Length: 255
Length: 303
Ligand SMILES: Cc1cc2nc3c(=O)[nH]c(=O)nc-3n(C[C@H](O)[C@H](O)[C@H](O)COP(=O)(O)OP(=O)(O)OC[C@H]3O[C@@H](n4cnc5c(N)ncnc54)[C@H](O)[C@@H]3O)c2cc1C
Ligand SMILES: Cc1cc2nc3c(=O)[nH]c(=O)nc-3n(C[C@H](O)[C@H](O)[C@H](O)COP(=O)(O)O)c2cc1C
Ligand code: FES
Image 1: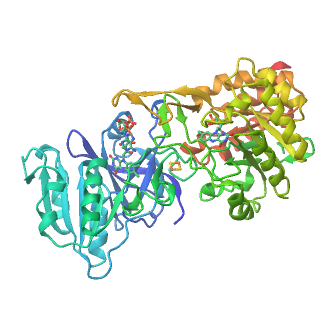
Image 2: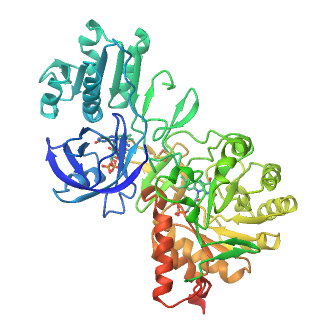
Image 3: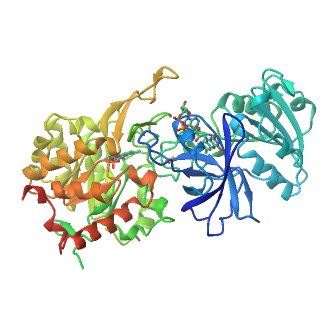
């Protein structure tokens, strides 16, 4: 799929809570075919400190509306600036970039595990699985009930389980403590979130011989394979998170 | 029609816009965004004799108006280049130049000999200014004797155009330019990255795995323009200006200060079309100001 550089119009900037917002984008041209796990390199205008583009996952697509969404956590200056964009503003992005999650084999049961902003690529993945006849188990982890986002969006897409670190809603503890992980049957795990969480999920999967794909969030310079800044150490040597990833099978990673 | 071409000896470039080594991959990364053959030339990734894995992650840190990198010359080595990359990139209708690197003089010599045989590579850029490797690299470019020796050794075995890429991490860059010119360099390109460092305050540790790295981007542009101006006045060979060029005006600054051509580096990360856009911009500027040949503005500020 050819990569594009485009200025897209913001249809909506929706604030989810004090930390998260979604941007819905559309352009004059038909949006390209995109797959879950892929990302965009987003330009942040007007600040010398946010000089590089910011990598953000494709969160959801709506082919009927010719639009797609990004889910963004305010992590620093760049994402803060993006949070102030308004309906009708334009956002310059390079997309679609990177590889994507693979589909399970026929009859396999997928499980999606996302923590915090790591849920960004998973909504799209859940829909994609549904469209291909799979009903995933969805396990979401947040710090507390105030930080839960988009829970309702997942309810139609699979069986959803929730954890909060303080127990204010759902199961108390980390996502990896959820009893569903032990009691339920699943054959393929898709995971995105903070590194410690992904590593915990990965080790659980390797112990049980379950295939697991994680989506990495390495720092990026270019996003298109030109700078070699985003590398991850794998059994095949240093690979670029932006072109060989961001999705990796945990068997490849030297975790 | 404005004349945009420049030459290094008898090697013609259709225009003065090249892309900087390590920031443009092997060109094909940019095929979706532009017709690479429209450029005056591309300088491919730093290449070594043996494959190199480069430095540990994190290798990049963003700083105000720039980035620090410590990639450390990750590449698959000359064999891979010759077999896998060369057949593909030699179809570009532009000058494809290889940036060569080594830990010892013998490495540079062996590489130059290999590349001399590649018909479609009309020039090499001798990188004696990489700040991110333990051995060689910048060590060659910050000692006058070493800079001379490595240039001389490569000159002896390499019959095509030899561009030497200078390090800004020296007290007097003019001395280095004159030294390599005397040893037979056909052109000098400058600047490579400035040695820098950044500390991640939140985690209370260095931002890069290597602690120090090379600074590039607009932050280094005034330093680069100054050095290009100094060097261009002193040498007779063409000077290629590099450092923080994002747009047309940046490129023009270098040309007006004395550069015969420029290389676009970090800018390609933010706008993959930056090089092609500023090429159009240069042409527009020349037309608007009534110049018929780009040579008329090279070093204009000294006239
Ligand atoms: C492939 C990929 C997909 C991503 N998808 C999303 C997404 O869908 N939604 C979202 O909110 N974020 C996503 N991220 C992370 C996002 O890119 C960073 O949070 C963002 O670049 C921070 O920019 P900033 O200017 O706001 O923060 P900065 O001021 O640059 O940094 C603030 C803090 O965030 C950390 N940080 C910076 N860049 C990254 C990064 N790439 N990964 C992790 N931490 C980082 C810094 O170390 C620092 O501690 C993704 C990252 C990658 C590589
Ligand atoms: C990620 C990265 C990798 C680089 N790799 C090389 C290299 O392999 N060889 C080289 O001579 N210069 C290398 N450079 C230096 C650039 O070619 C250029 O000299 C420098 O970045 C300054 O130009 P800029 O400010 O336009 O980027 C690299 C720079 C960056 C940012
Ligand atoms: S971010 Fe530049 S190579 Fe991956």
